Length: 330
Image (cartoon, rainbow, N blue to C red):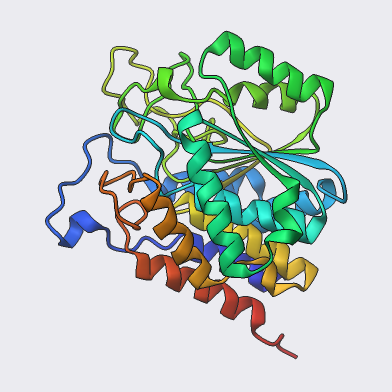
């Protein structure tokens, strides 16, 4: 597993060409962020390969009958039903936690993203042919955007019936001044399900927290990005999210980070099929696009992820499966 752990981190660090490098699509405005710097900061904090460290922690905390809360989703006036990065990775990891660890999973998101996740779950179940094994143990629910209502809902979820783990996947969180930004530096605070309120409570109660992100403005990236990422709004607080987690996972796309954690879980359990197949990833993305999601970087309604094509998403899953199914060296 040591070799697999390092290889998984090598894969999630890949920085392929994106749409605006070759296809004439304008580069999204906003701060030019150093992905490598963000990854190094996370690796320094964790002190081990990121995806595998998160998987090991989940193996220790998310056993039979235990409840795990996942959160994803991004809504803005230009992205009214969410984006292609986040929801697929969330569903794939949720399936693995249920099938592999017998956990019960609750996914929290914006109201507009709930039907997208339901569509994606149906597509994943149909593609894998195992929906009966995990869909009944999965719940998708909307979460408030109003901070006071979000605080009350968070208290009910954490204090009344605490989960054993809390995982964020491509979920924007506030900077030190309480403002939530896109990668372009736009203030989109009022549009977001404020699931960030859960994480402070979880950390104080010693509940396992994992945050998967790719640009530094997501929940879990707190303290990693520094002060270089200026925003485009009057708050002057920068786009960097201030919410920290125990196990940050930084990947080129958050889907890749979630898939790498799933692959690590599959490797530890000796069950490669916990990781969904490449064709299932393609089917999820296509069905979610039909349900209204867009590529968050290009804002185009196509099955691409942060400017990278569908073929690359499929190839990434193929590489993960090749690693899981390769015979161990003597």
